[in-house]
Image (cartoon, rainbow, N blue to C red; front, side, top):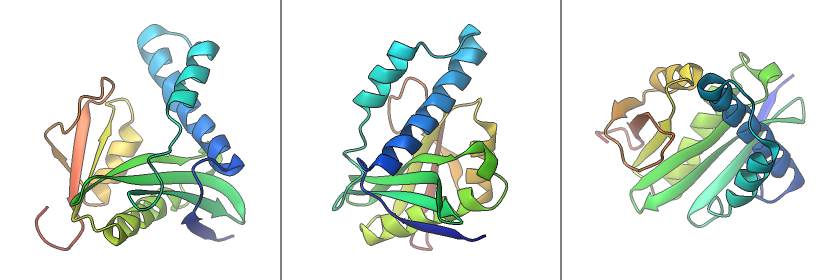
Length: 167
């Protein structure tokens, strides 16, 4: 089986299903860790609807979908924060697809998309409990940096130069 990564409309059925899977996983992980329960279904629906992904469209963004053997397996998104800075978001693979190289492929595809949008560096935020994500970003050359946003769930911020120089 092989991987492919291609742009996808943020509001396609495939993108919507992957967004739901991503948000359900990270939300449930947080609530189970900090409150000992899964996400309240009504809250989950509100948050999924509130974060549509409409900012992940050209000319300022892009949503990418990875397929493994033709089946949707994961996503990554990129959006410009300013002309030189892109933000990496929505990096996700279904659990059964992990460990096959898809996450690194999605991040690299997002970096290519950010370069095509004119970005010189990429930033991202993540949580402390998402240790696998933090390890992936470090392995791909991202370094921890100062906070660039006020995301109440973010605990770690990363940055990487995209043009071969200093970011």
